[in-house]
Image (cartoon, rainbow, N blue to C red; front, side):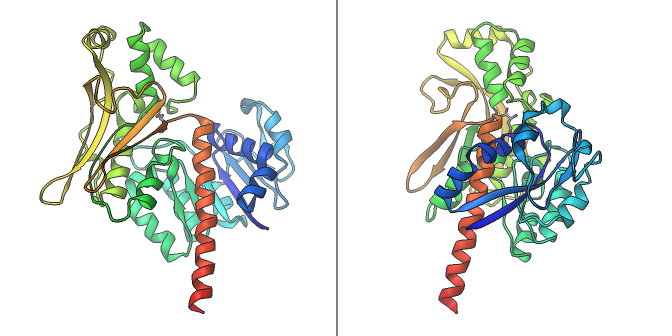
Length: 355
Ligand code: HSE
C-alpha cells in the first residue's frame, strides 16, 4: 500500500489534531482511502524538533500536555526547531505546514513552503499567509517541481470551499463571492446578541480554539481580508494585494447596537466579498453589515461560516460549515492528503494512457 511520510511543521492545535487522527484512526483511514500516513518529523517553536526516519511513535508523545512537550529529551530530538534543515533534508513525501499566519509578509510560512517545494516535496497548509500573498507563485513553483501545493484549510477550515469551486464549477462563470468567513468574530457577534460583553466573548472564542494566536486579526477583519484575497485570486482569477482590499472589523460594534439590530430583525455579520466589475477587474472588501433576516448569510451563526458563490448557470451556490476549530482544520489537511493521493493516481493513469 502507498504510504506518505509526513513532516509536521508547527505542532499547535491543528497539527496535533492531525497527529491524533493518524494515531487513533490511521488503520481505518488506510483501509478506506488506500494509503497510509506516517509522521517522520515534527518541528515546533516551543518544543523543538524531532526526526525519526522509522516513524514517530505518536501515542506517547500525544499523552504529554502540549506545554510540557520537549523534543530535546527524546531520541532524534533537539531543542531547536531546525525548520529549514528538516524541510529541506528529512526524507518526507509531504510537508504539512500549520504555523501561525503572518498577515504582513506571510513569513516564516512562505519560506517553509518554498523550501519544501524546491526540495520536491508536496505541501499541505492551513496557513493563509502563503496562499493569500504568494499563492500564484507557489503554485507555479509546485508545478515546476512536479509536486502539489494544497491549501483547503486556508478558508473555512475543512469545509470544502476551495475544492468545491475548483472541482465542481467547471463551465460556470462565477461573478462574485461573499461570505461570513471568521468563526471568532461571528461567535463574538452571536454572544453579544445574547448579552455577553466583548472581552468575555473574545476570551470564550480563544478558549474554544477559534481565534488566531493574536485575536486582533479576527476582530479587525485581517483574517477575512486574507480569505477574500484567496477566494478572489483562486476563484475569480484576480491578483489582489492586501492594499486592494479595504478592511473594517467588528471592534467598533457595540453590544447594544447588536441587540437593537436584532430587535429590528437584523443580524450584524462581518462580510467579506469580491466581485467582478464589468471591465473584468475584481473589487473586494471586508466590512460589518447588518443583514436582513432573510439574507442567506444572516442565519450563519457562531463558528459556522458560509461562502456564497454567484454564478451564471446555477445562480447562487452556498457552501456552509465549520469555519474554525482544531479538528475541523486538521480535516482540511487530511482532505489535502487525499487530493495529493488522487492526483498521483491520475498521473499514473495518464502516463499509462500516453505510454
Ligand atoms: N481564526 C479563524 C476564525 C480561523 O476565527 O475563523 C482560522 O482562519
